[in-house]
Image (tube, rainbow, N blue to C red; front, side, top):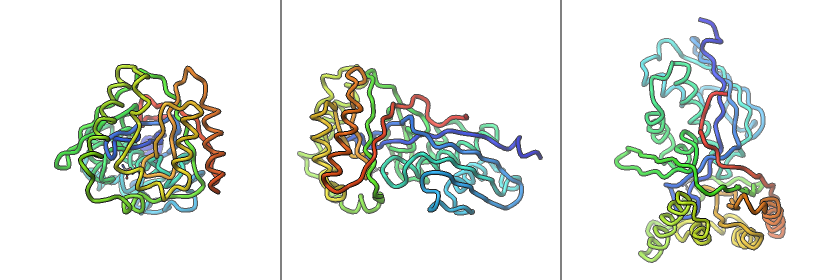
Length: 309
Ligand code: HSE
């Protein structure tokens, strides 16, 4: 069998989970993408060449997350006898362990690539189910697969995700600190229970955020990205977080949030105001005052999610 026939090139987006109040259920896809060249092999051999972000840390063998995810599709499609290995070439632009969904991107890339080569035995909803089984929660994998802004629910392991493009044109300003923050460490600082007051605070903001984005009501965004159930506890893990948030808002951001479990911070700016460069530099400068080196990315919301290149 020729290698070309069993090869695919794909693009998978970085994602930002939570979007402030939507802990473990809201997410969005960005225009920052990893590129993957993927070939399924008949022989039992996995090789990975990695360029860019995380090149030193990503496993280059059968432990590679892209391969492990691809294997899920191969097994569920009943094709394990035909395909036992893979050749992986990655060009990574998504910073690793920074709250931009790098592991979700790897999972989604592997699932999608194998599914394409096998001539799509599964639809996107099924891929989403597999991705949630591997990742444990839907807030990064859903936007990586579907694109746009996503709202997800999980019920007895079954995931439902609704994806839409906001009616407000937003620029995403992401400050990327030079330190990694593991999701497990960022989850370990969270309390087991939240008060009724904080629950109401978050439910009202999350509902307001989705309603405002769907209806194009930018006047309702000012408080809609606020959170009381995870960010306050995680602030101690990201030096200067509150000050960077205030600086970004003072520079004109409509809202600010910790991206996923951090360490990135994300500001949401109205495209029509053209303030994204100012917001980016003030976020980086404010981080510097807290002895954190950071760089800024200015991104858009990605419409499509994972796709062939
Ligand atoms: N919702 C998750 C969290 C995202 O905030 O812990 C990290 O993967």
